[in-house]
Image 1 (tube, rainbow over the protein chains, first blue to last red):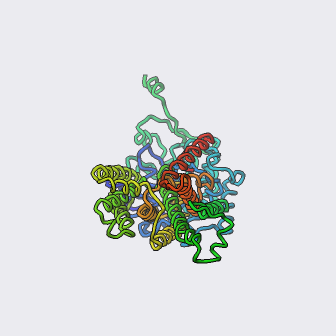
Image 2 (spheres, one colour; image 1 turned 180 degrees about the vertical axis):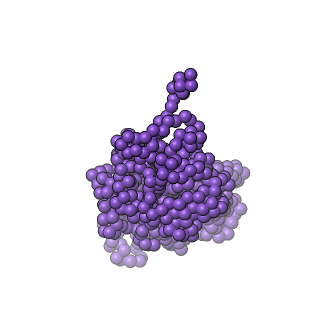
Image 3 (cartoon, each protein chain N blue to C red; image 1 turned 90 degrees about the horizontal axis):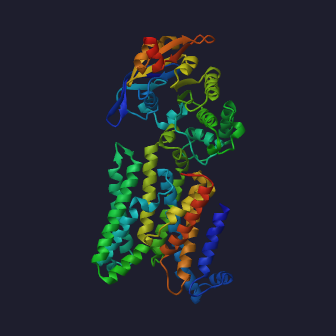
Length: 265
Length: 329
């Protein structure tokens, strides 16, 4: 679905991503991890044409994205970014904005069909119950669900999420990621997700991309990428990698300085 | 929406009926039916109606420009004059008066110079803030404010150096007035502002998306750069033409959009039309007050819009703070 070849890009004249090679296949659930400033968000932005290209190509469904219009891309790729919509807009009105890329050239108002699609994505995301509430009156978890509902309303083939679980408690982290996983399995939605939490990435992703300093350090299944050697080198901190006894996925534990000193002695 | 239309009609009728020669509302229809000849007919058709039409066009244009700019900058304090366009127009008009050109072509020289002044400002404003095809909105705002300062300093310089008869006409021009002798000019302004309303309406959904932020709008398939350029040019044209014909009538472009936003919410599909209508009604109403309040002396309409608009703004802001909302609604 996405083929990135030797892509180098950034903002202005600053290079941020360096020689990126990455494939994401249809129906995959791919996670991007890496330290702050390693280029995770930038990589995601590159895919939706928000970056300057210095070299290489990014293809989406076989087509160079630079040859695609924003509108064409928005019909196939939906992005849930970290910018919260703080506005006097109801959840339903916000979700309906997801139909905008599908509108005709002079179309300004939604049709019955558009409303049905929006209602359906609100049903899938359990947001129908508070659809008439203003965004400013919803909780962090509810906003995240509304963002996903809007993205689904675009009827994308690829869903990109940038840290959808930041600022959420574990209940909401799990429910949001369970939802995304269901959408991936049941609707065949391809998912590319930036995650800070290594353990969430391990539990949910088919494949993990580990980034460091604007380059891809390693790509593979969670058990291939999440080993103490790579993680310690990239994150420059001591970790212990165990196995989750139920899911058998790798589990990364941190080690505080005091404990480290005690062990060294 | 109905309320706004009603307000506009009421303001129009009030404006028709009041003035130094009071004409009761009930008599307006008979006077028009009788047709030409009566002095009342002349007053209505040749003095009051043109003013009302100009008030409609300029009030609408200014508040439309305000809505567009507030939406584009995502900043409720931006108004048409923030960008320095009015300053440029004022400078143009001041030069026109001092050089005496306004006496050579009495009808068109001032608007023309005003428009040229506005245009001279728009061009560097636009060009200095465009990098690789992308319009930098923050830079636009800052440059605009600086240009405002520069041009108002230059106007002050001209004022300081000019003779007293010039002084008065410059000051009066800057304060703004809806007195405009040329029908042709009035029709041009009305046409341009309605055209800009229609054009901006085509971008109402883009503006809705833009209110989520530029990046979010891009995610929704909006060509953000193109939209910003079109919106900027529309707002500039609206402001330029208003200022060059009517001078600097303040506050309409700040208060009316803010107010309608509070009442109508975020949706530009209603907001654009609503602001236009409300702005038109507001300016007609203010102008009538300006004409009649200490009649026969006429106050500059900018005084009324400033006082009325400013008080409304403070009231609205206070109410909103109490409701606990901030930022662009």
